[in-house]
Length: 458
Image: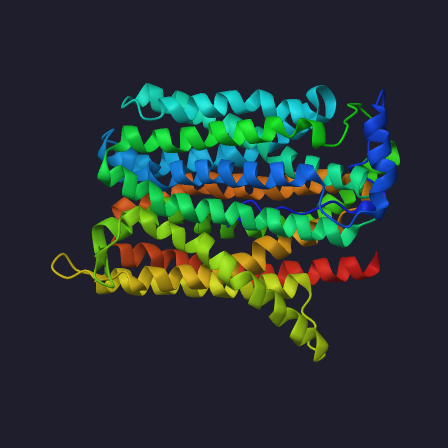
């Protein structure tokens, strides 16, 4: 979703020991735990603080985001175009600020205190978001982007560091931890995306926004309570050598084409929070199995489908590989771009079928969510793995930050693209995006071929 990203968590390559930090002034208990840990096969106690804290934080973030577009349009009087613009500015900021979060943690505060420090504006932003005023909206979204964005790159990294210190060499255990961590992200997103529209309709927006505020306060309390069980951090700045800098830009150059094309995927994917929601509100018959859905409740389909589809799709790649059909990372991503193009074709067909007198079934958009979720698994999950495997040992974090920036740029692109929705027939709008994706898919095919040739020569 989130993982996207939906945010997709993944560990660093342990060959370079990117999480490892010397234990300076560590207690005897910490040193003893580290010495005993190679014989332990259970997850460290700290993992459960990461797991439940992340579930509550993602529940808070995606719950707020689920009703944000309609809140801006219905309560604050913004046009659909301006509400879409504000939504994508906010999402973009959430995926640009991880660069700042990583820098602050690595050079000044450390991961734990960066997370703690920026959780405060995160909670404040959730509390004041329900004040029906555009200035308060701007202030709240600024605080929320600051909190979510700065925290984002540090939680999973601190968890990886905890495993490297307390369970050294147990890569399988750490891999399982990151899979469970990703599961927590999507469970939190699904629960809140379903609950928030209901709370909003049952009471009002002000009450609804207090729900994610309480969840973020709970996430903060859980995370802070786990400090005695986390890795010991030592903040230090290490200057890169000229050779490391040269290697960094060479790798970045090889991956720049891949990352550039992925921007267009995020542009399409993140419109589920804006144009897809407005389309559902205006053009879909929201009756499903005898119940009426809220238009912004449909977003819950994505995290639910991630949980359901990720295991079988991962198994499919393994089965094909055993039969001699080995899909490279770029091949899987190519499948994702084809599926994204099909998704927009489906949305375009639904847009042309709807009329002011007759709305189309909500199943059209649910089916589109199924296809684009499969595309997300092929592009987002696989792309993050590609970023890790293609990057040299000394720049894993840099390449990961560049991957997050593609989400930022995709939403920056939406500042112009999503505004067209209110100016066009929805069928024509989604049809235009279908044509755009046909061109993008062809571009990715060429970029992937060049990338694979360059990778084979390294």
